[in-house]
Length: 81
Image (cartoon, rainbow, N blue to C red; front, side):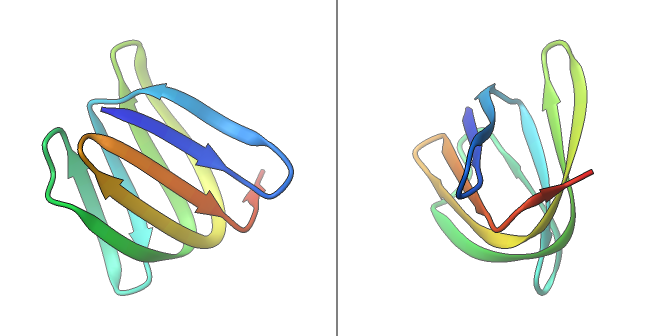
């Protein structure tokens, strides 16, 4: 699936992912290939991205995620160090 993580000022990540774990406002959840359509708010915490080359982590300061037809779009308020 394709994943884009975007903040108001830059694109943080764009590429293929096999699994993504999110800090949902109601608890942590994971999205895999062919996931059902979904829109959820995000709390502050790590987004863990599993790619063919390994695992990456981005800490977001809240935002929204949309999952639709193997495309995952994250609109993050900010990505912190």
